[in-house]
Length: 272
Image (cartoon, rainbow, N blue to C red; front, top):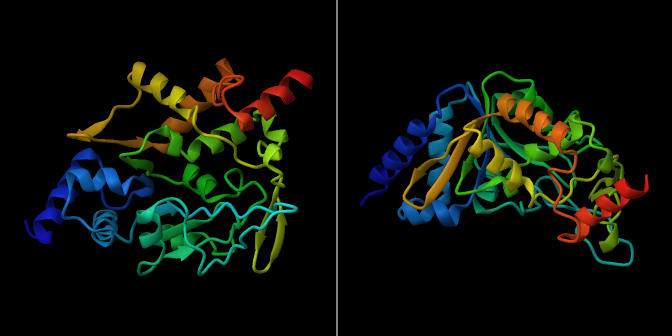
């Protein structure tokens, strides 16, 4: 099957899932799972189809995280905005280097932006709360027609979950979850160091929030054989996320004893 037909099939799948011109989307994707259902599609073609659907009147955003933290007594990589490769998947890296994309400057949690977002958010964006107030996620939260697209990814990839923790005022954010690894709350780049007022932690337990939303009928999957995907309104996610944490303040942490990084925060809550 030719690539034109493969692109057509992928475009049909995405538009049937809800994508439209002029939307502002953040994408979390497993190219391996996407390729299982669209074996002829290359990463470059998948990125091109996303841009084609959304158009330059909207925004396509990918995380381009490098997690460049300072680690005393250890070697660590310095973030280079133009050259450091994304550690959030092959589609993220191909998108980062594609035409018209700019990358923000957070040493730990940068984003790649195309379309409206690229003209609205400075490449200098690097808040001390990388996924909180002043971040690219914060911009999406305040922008009309904003959505998260998850292609073959579950809520362990849901970056907005960390934003929900932030705006909900989760008390455990006062402590870094990576102290046990001797990781400091400080990003490092080729232009210097940046102290962080909070450090995003583990996201494995975000699947509990996912199950809750599915059970209540608040979200639903759109699928093609084994490719399970979501296309979800960001305001809806935030609204229900705040409610979820209000009822269960540790609902986005792993259970006690299940995860070293989440345990750091459980201990803090018990001793405060």
